[in-house]
Image (cartoon, rainbow, N blue to C red; front, top):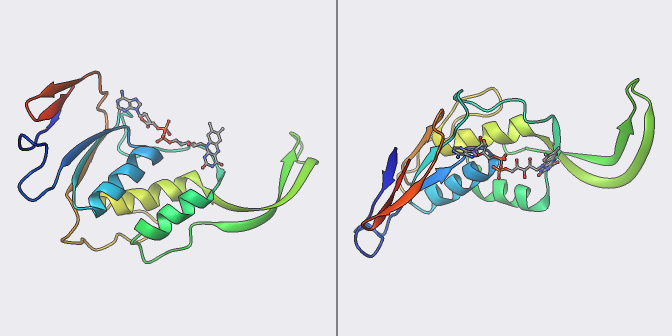
Length: 162
Ligand SMILES: Cc1cc2nc3c(=O)[nH]c(=O)nc-3n(C[C@H](O)[C@H](O)[C@H](O)COP(=O)(O)OP(=O)(O)OC[C@H]3O[C@@H](n4cnc5c(N)ncnc54)[C@H](O)[C@@H]3O)c2cc1C
């Protein structure tokens, strides 16, 4: 159970809010990183039983919005998150190219994107990038795994999350 409560108008005296985010994959982490940078506190509740998510796919297209997001919020020293590919190829089970589409795409990997986001959200270390030093203007963050959210109930000026 987690709760997020604030003053009657929904804000703490400093204007900070405490957000509870359900789901700690790329979407939840992106929301958490942006809120943290705005000075708000954020708690992520992820139902996965292990502390880190794994193997959500291999290469992924890093679209324009994802790249813009990382350019704005990524505070790791390492900035490169994608490589340019000039075609997409579809292979059969023997590895032969059966279809090829030309076109520039920025390619990344799910793991790399995830670990970049964890480094920026809650300082989780990995081989992908260094952990950014804390910024005193940022909000506090926490990431809990093995937390299956079943209900969200309004309570006073906040919510209680079960
Ligand atoms: C085959 C495939 C290929 C893709 N390729 C690309 C690509 O190339 N480029 C790209 O940008 N996107 C791609 N996507 C889309 C991308 O994977 C999704 O947009 C992205 O993962 C969505 O992230 P999300 O955090 O919103 O949702 P999800 O990744 O679905 O994460 C939701 C999280 O919430 C948790 N959760 C759910 N319910 C609860 C609960 N009740 N309590 C606690 N936790 C909960 C889940 O365990 C999960 O970790 C692809 C998707 C698929 C399926």
